Length: 225
Image (tube, rainbow, N blue to C red; front, top):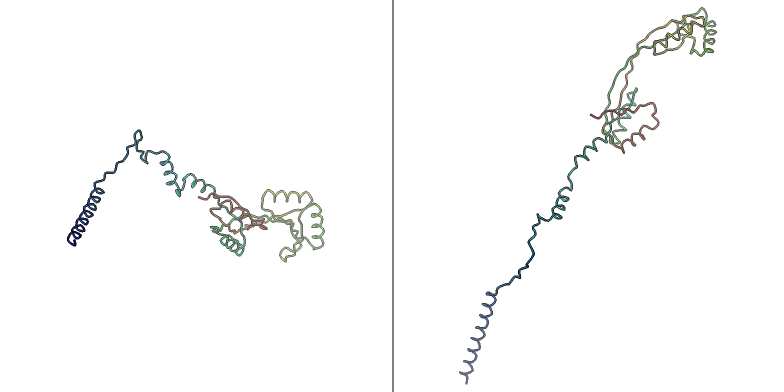
């Protein structure tokens, strides 16, 4: 009996081993069947117009449009502000603009011109000079008695910058019965101008705020090149 039982156990083990190897071989030899879709073709991504368009849009992100760049450059402006006749005032205004973030520089220039001083030569007494000066004032002439030693009791008729205007004043005084003389002086004027470069719309409003109360200063738009 023990011999028969042992033989059955061996046979059973052999049968189980055979089944195991058969299942392994069946799994390795299995063929995957792919069902062919008839009437359909394979679409390449490069042939899809929607995909290609989206790709172009993605590629354009971050690229600067040259037309927009040119328009931005054209929108800038440069200004010349002045004249600044005082050095301290020029430095203060320049510092104010620099603090506001502007690109600024100072330029100096000198301008000269003739001035014409008209006067009636010295009279005998100061009283006589005063009477004549008051008479001329009533005629709208800016007359005043000179008190300086070298020209005491002369009557100043004012200073003008135009030669024709000076001659006209002489003629008017002559019509009133007095002879007027004229002295010509050369006057040199030094002035500074502030150049503010690359100003855009927001900067123009800031410039207006900075220059509030400085009506004597001119703001001239100049070429930025």
